[in-house]
Length: 68
Image 1 (cartoon, rainbow, N blue to C red):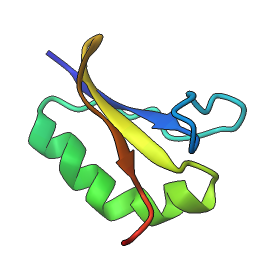
Image 2: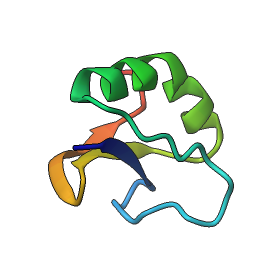
Image 3: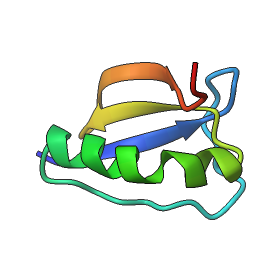
């Protein structure tokens, strides 16, 4: 199985109109570690929230990149 991030705007729509990393990960832990290291760059690129997918199944969605 592979894991990947779907990048979303504030309304939950997928952000596809700009070049963003399209990383694929062998595990959920690897994907989450990568996001922990790169969330600031994604936020600066216009990504407001993310969804984690295992293949086509959504593990979780609507996770904001904004610090609370």
